[in-house]
Length: 444
Image: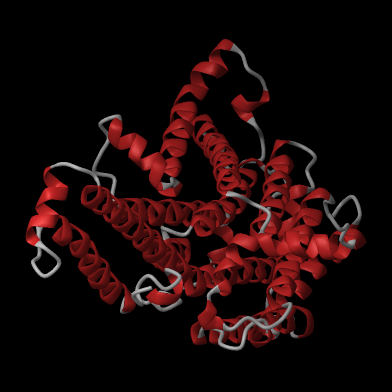
């Protein structure tokens, strides 16, 4: 075997993708565990009556009394984990629930649950930043209800549309972990009105509050870098007409965003402000390049993705100008806008490209099953014709011009294959049925 250059091997690895199906399951389980832990922390603070007060309460130590106080939080964390496992579960996992007698959890129910979780996270974020909305008409109640309703509906509809995409289900939990870790940090932080300074202040207190924020940001960044190939896999479809090297460049840019996000979590702003800001700028630059060059990755990028990419870039530049040049708002607002745009853009990438690929894969699988069944029946008919017995005698008795039982048994599957090919041809698959089946649908 010829030893290939290291650069070529790395490029091939990036093109193939870094996460297998088993890897997706592992990523989702880790994120479910961390999100449920964050939910347990918030519930423990609520039971302690000190949410947002800047002290840890029952979380300071584990006495017998504190364990009793933590019991509702543990139950809540377990319920959160169960809900998220169902929301993000694969078909195999849901089939296991059916065998356990827990049938009836359909795609719509899973999508609704996903929307409810996201709406709850928004309400908690608004709750922990109440003074920030004092100048807004209607105050925190209007802001919370408006944002929670809008995000809940959008995420529910998106989950319903993209639920079959493995990469989307994993990345949905990545975004959810970043939000949940931030909420847990908000419930514990002793930094006061952190939102008047910057979002990174949540990671500066050197305690459990800082750990919640920094761990969530670091893990989310690592998962983003690993899931980049899965998020962009849909662009391999022939209809998008990938440009040479386009997919690799896109995946490298996604990895740059993820690694930069990891750096933001690993280097708190109070430890090394310059390096922390360098990582933050790296994430912003990677996102800006990805959106600006969106048409360079493939010749026929989805129009909706192109429009959203340019709009997101305009919003990011406007937010930076509003913060840095005009002083209309503080750094926290800019950071929230930037984080939201990055995750929304990556989810849009999956929603506009990944669903098509999933449909094509299902069509290939169905046609392959029909093809295998047809081959088996042809072989069975041939063996009946050549072997002695009632089947062979019937074939001889009817002759070549009369449709005997064995001859009819050979032709029926071809009719079914032809009908299946005609149905599949209009199903929106990437390639015509005759190409996908290597000529089977064309009669070969």
